[in-house]
Image 1 (tube, helix red, strand yellow):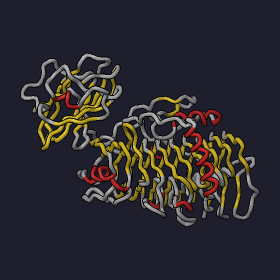
Image 2 (tube, helix red, strand yellow):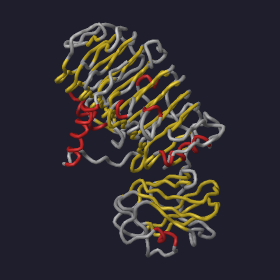
Image 3 (cartoon, one colour):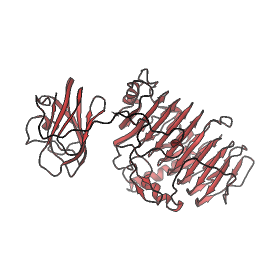
Image 4 (cartoon, rainbow, N blue to C red):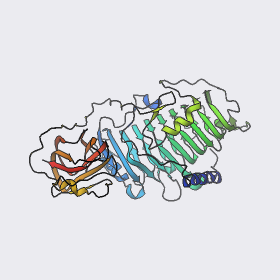
Length: 517
């Protein structure tokens, strides 16, 4: 078992971070991306690959209950779905939802006995506050661009056994990417691991993520005899202010490359009970005993190459304590089945700082220490249902404009504008977002069938260059396009329709958002 995390050391480090925030050292998080990045890397790309909800419906959720409802609303437990999450998910808005395609619980995001799901943060960001994500008896799961923080196993409230993300019981093919997992102390403060795998969990990749301020980074295997887990890749992650388990490996094979480990207080990569770790081109900084077999005499193995050890201290060897340093050398050969490109360890702190964590625009590294936008999402193996593309026409739709007399709401609006101006039939009034992107909706008291919309702009500082039309009841995308105009789509009964501006040359002005049957 690992040592209890020393709360005094963690609290001192947290206090230092608070001072930095107060003095403006910590940068604000930019707006999160709304797109799922390129295909899974590392071991998550093996065993048939990890595509999540690609090819399925896309829905939007702002509460944990809505996430569960989206899972339960599928035709089956394996029907592909992408759930875009925005806002704060907490105990108050995360209830159990029942259905034949789900198995959920209150107070935790429960991905249990399901497959083919993507959970991605969008818009202003997705924060799971004291609510963990539990993956159990599931496969083909993508979690991307989310923050999970302060999940407790003791105290109040508790969730997911204290793990930010926990996987157990026959889990296969999980990719967690561009996410931030953090606590505010160790076990004595009620927290457990940030990223745990046990009971036959395999083919997992953690990439471009931040793990910080926790007694325990994560484990693979719950005991020295529970050795059914493995094939895990960790790359381009930041481990910061972690006491131990960065990670703890009990059996299995793991590949760690291009990670930045900073302030590992007690121990780092703990390979034991026959585990094999391939450790290359990582940057270890201001840390202690960053690699070895710790707290047991059940030996583990490692292959090392290209790593940088910057102000790393090493303890003497003992009966149950075997650090790899002070001059780490390989004691095994570890091969991996996939292709990958290494960044030089010397640039890892800079590359990881610019790419890792939620709200970084899903930037990735190209192997030359230069962050770049990800490649397009790969096509799902199943036949996808394409998002309908809007049809722009010069002729307006015929019939009655159903927006007249309806209600409206939207995202933040520019000063002096009103949501109601898009449904008043007056081209001289308009709504503008508070910036170049935003959304405005038309809504009715009961489901209304529409099959086309017409968005009319007023002259102003900018024009729309990209947009999506969303079913406000389900979050499904009805149409997409570039310039504003007319969009047609299959007749849909809904209570709310949303025009979401994803790009503009400046602050656009929407004079009318017309809807037609």
